[in-house]
Length: 65
Image 1: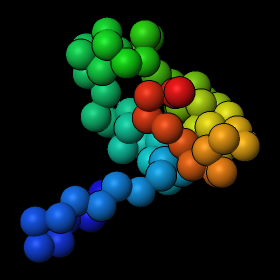
Image 2 (image 1 turned 135 degrees about the vertical axis):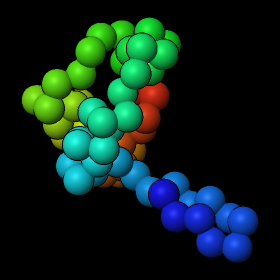
Image 3 (image 1 turned 60 degrees about the vertical axis):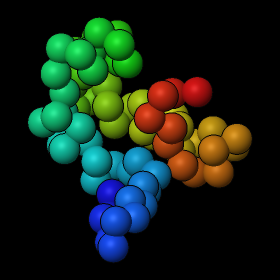
């Protein structure tokens, strides 16, 4: 994410986002989004699956859709 002049630019997830994702995981994220406590392996696997999905053209969707 980049914030410049009041504009937020979101970037697709990639494997460099694994550690920050895990650091920011809380009970609300687990409850409403991921459905379970993440591990390094599970987050890496999720991002790899998203990146490989042709519909996303290499971009990982935070919602998994």
